[in-house]
Amino acid sequence: MKETYFVYRDNKALERQSDGVEFCKIPEFYDDKIYFYCAEYMLFWTSVEDVGDLSKGKDFKLKKKIIPATLKEICDEGLIDYISLIKQYNIQDNKILDITYISI
Image (cartoon, rainbow, N blue to C red; front, side, top):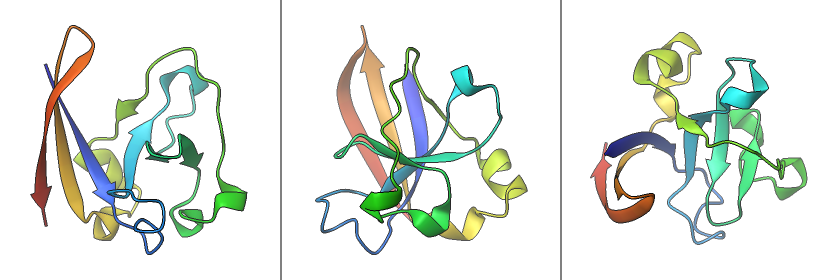
């Protein structure tokens, strides 16, 4: 199975040794909002303007999996200009087999 995430490479991504933050949705919140997730720090941000500010990052304890925000959802929220990279995970048996990066 492949999962495709759109990524915003914020100005603090290098400090975090990160590709950037993934645009995602958190289904268990039932709010249909786009969140920004940094896998290296396991932090979420609720606003693109706050991404990278560790004091504004959230450490949600989730019971379920996050899902990628779609390109349409990102466009509808006016966030299209923040996409810097596309990351596609190849997942099998809940394990990441490889990751494909597409620079924009």
